[in-house]
Length: 448
Image (cartoon, rainbow, N blue to C red; front, side, top):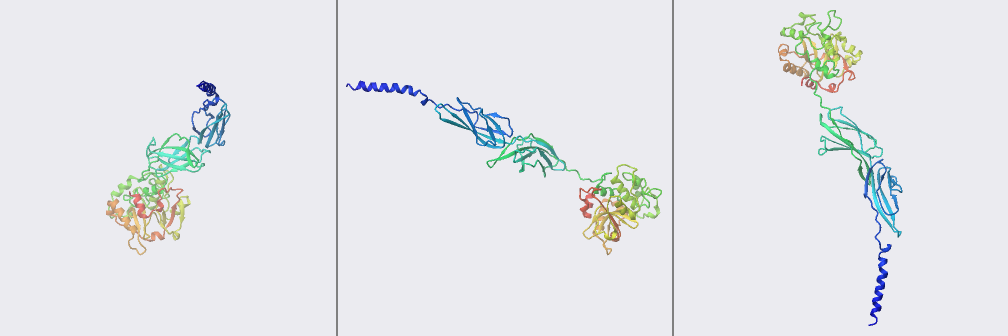
């Protein structure tokens, strides 16, 4: 019974010793490092920023990749290049234990900037943007939806130095919205900068094909469309298109559009028309050189009264070549006939509309009885594809003329006897590639 007071006293003494120790620094909670965010995404060349770390004591910082971003003793981060780095924040407590926290920083390219959007051809857009040296490439996004919610298409540009691209096969005459963003590759994955401001542009509309003559439009298509204007209602008149002195172009051949007298005179004639009886009625119709001179004047000029192009038929093709209109080939060296070629032979000049598969040629000229389509026969004088085509078009397009004057054939000697002036496409443009058409294709283009 005497031992119990001793044991109780020992327990009380131990408790008294333990209580102060429980409240000592050894048992206190470790101080915490407070951070605002565990990760940041910053644009290249962003302003210096603070991690916003706080703790009761001295903090230390270390960047795992100081080439991407460095940090000073005060916790200020300076962005240097695109990439990824981890900032380790360290704190030593009073017991010299180290507490670490990690903050991830990813640096991406700056906000991209579109510099221009243009449309020079139907269904295409040419887009340019500012170069960003820090980027690995760019992604161009485009859509007909202003909010980029649907039908969004993308083009990835994999070279940093490429700052221009052309989008093709778009809808002509349609408004498109465009934006671009730069990217860099981090850890094998693309990381994107902020997207640029959106720009919009309407693609060029598909132009309506030209179907009528346009004075002063210097193109091969316009040459053919102009050449058909007097067709089927203008009589052949010896000296028609020449002046009174018979030295060059007359008033009709230096006028835009056709003379109303041509059609009036045509309506007065019947199937027995004989040009020998109307010689030098120069205001009533056209002869071969007057016709070709009138055509060329209406293609090259826009106003009346300029210098004309009526000359002697035999040398017309070579003379036009000397003026810089195109290249000249003498008759014995001509091997093909393309639409628009000016062909001169002794006493005659005509306009080629191209070849048929059998080698025959469709042509336009002023030849008795008037301005008409003809085809050259085959070498043996038999009917050719060109003659068949000429007859078909004159019969269906100009039935009144064809009822009076059905002859649409000319001998194959037209081809062997004629020198050729082929238009330079620098002088008369050929966007429609008229010179590559067959006779049948050229006629379809002239008569849509």
